[in-house]
Image (cartoon, rainbow, N blue to C red):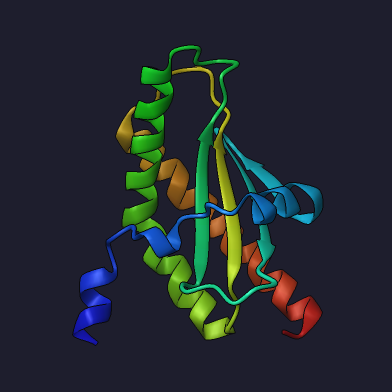
Length: 140
């Protein structure tokens, strides 16, 4: 229990989506929704993964041409994810489901952390609803 508490707010390597195969599969057959300014792609994992969810975070070049700006937004998104992920993880463990997630920042302005954290919280709530609905329909 103590180890779980210590890792609750970490963002470890085994929680990061790195597999190109899984990412392309996610774009081909995953479900998506938009929760301003975040677009989320997700799907139930076909493979056994080491955590309840693995996530990748992306920022497009269209609105942020400079890598410095994109990297800053990704850092802010990772921090907002790290702080709020435990709510999602608890529900996924209850449902006994593992998911793969891609979070894409699609806003056009440089975000402020507090706004971004609020958006992440709303997005995770929407994701929870969709996963819950998916599980009840599929009887997973």
